[in-house]
Length: 117
Length: 111
Image (cartoon, rainbow over all chains, first blue to last red; front, side, top):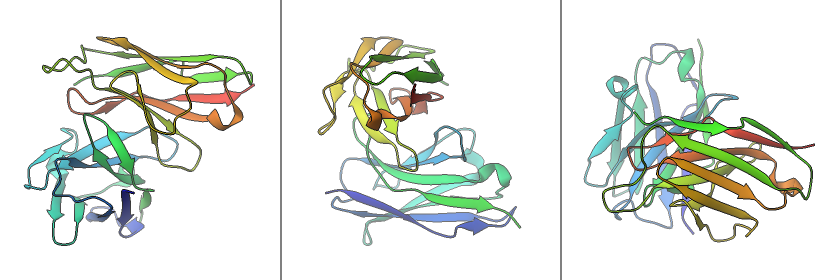
């Protein structure tokens, strides 16, 4: 059974960097899937942040591209998200998800990150 | 950017009655391989999204057959033949043909 688990600080100060890691079990991030981050502000809808392939190739949402960096650690079967210069608008539940054929078949449980001083 | 527009945004339904959600895209979702990457997700309160339907009409394993997806090009529909209490939540369409974009979500509640 494929499982994804997000981890990272639950609170980040404004202007600082949000860092999250997604640990994958039951599947290899070296497989032919893209590994994604999606976020959901409280009470709002879903927003795609970006994706990474095990080769290191990435695609980012244009609206966040200047602040986002994703990386993958094949030895740990993990991938990570960094979002710089955060503001209150970045407060959200952050999900990691596996892309398969233009869709997301597995999601993490999500982690709430609050931007506050 | 592809914009996904769902309607209605709120859907009160009587138990046992059918429900239908529309999703329209701002451009065709047919990929150059002929596939259409239109998906439907259910998000129950406090839970992660769960995929119900992929590539327009393919139901995921474990999804009740009262859920069905249809459509083509830019116009898609999710139907629930008989709504049950466990169907309460928010339903999102998502396109994976041109990057990834979600609809605004449709909140299904029981009347």
